[in-house]
Length: 529
Figure (spheres, rainbow, N blue to C red):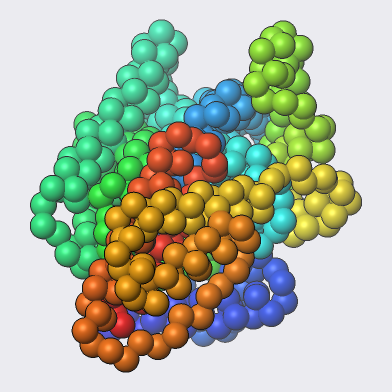
């Protein structure tokens, strides 16, 4: 049995690698291609059935994927866009869940309102992994990507809370509004607090203990699981614990990781996230045969009709919600307009059209118990599973595949000045190096030509950020050690200047991290020479 399961896992991993190559060749978004491929593979004769355990998703897959998404999300952008993110992550989830509940109750015979809210809680959140993966290769405005990433990090928690309350109502037959509201805020706040507490403990370990790159990497793998499991143990939001903790540690990563720890952790996490994303989306596609078997008591054309209608409801409600959520606050407060600038309706439409659903929705549906507390079968469980699957497939294929065409059709104007800011960052770091050399190494600059060349190199970089100087190979061993130490000091000075810019929030986190990675690579090369 163990060997059979291991063979299935290895086969899936091999398939993910091959499908990733093919999706890149065909220019199709990786998660969309994997879901479709999983569907095709599931109908191949002789392929063993693969069942997706919801506990596996919530406990094994979700913490690292959320942590990675939070780590790569800019805290400065997240906080700056907290208003639109909150309106989407909380307001839109509640509106979507309510709309789905009312439509499902009206459309499906004997489908209670409580079951409608259960279904609404399942399919209301957009997916963090799908949004990030689909936009990875698209030239979309940074504001769109930042809002979608921030929304998809938070709405998992709000939707799971709606799901939890609806499930309790169905199992117990009771729902007290004020009690549910109090529990909602308690679950949210305590989840965030637990994430921040554990992230600060991790910060102290990384900062003050004599860790190695391997130990740092191991701790980064353990941390999201500690956050998630601790919060869930006390019945708070594990999702928000991971998200808040990941954002906190990401913001302070420059202070706690050495260059080699960052490089090694980045490599390990890149591979891990690639494999987990691949497994999650291909497993979604492989679920269809079992889900279809479960709807034996229903007419397939009818359930397909229900699923398509509800899929359209989720898309339309999102498009209806985003426009007033974006423009009404601007009409009520000129301060928002002055602070955030003008907002194009095209940007708003792109955010509205990017509500792909993903693995959290399917895992929530699979987590529905088989029976009620009185022993009776859970009503319409297989129907909810099928509708959830169709909504995921419908949004991924319709919206995900059409996004590149919508982007081209919209002809969005990019006013972002990242290239200019990148040159400014390079200029300031080069200027800081020149000032340091002139103040601390005047004798060496006068005596050793190589020191003078380094100074001249950074002077030219200050005038033209993309200039490169090919340093001559020095063969004299007398000053190699001093020369290498000087280069490392130069890198340290650039790091300090970069940290000042980061703390001053003058440039985006993405630009700062890109420059930090260049310094990491430069330091790695210097130390190995």
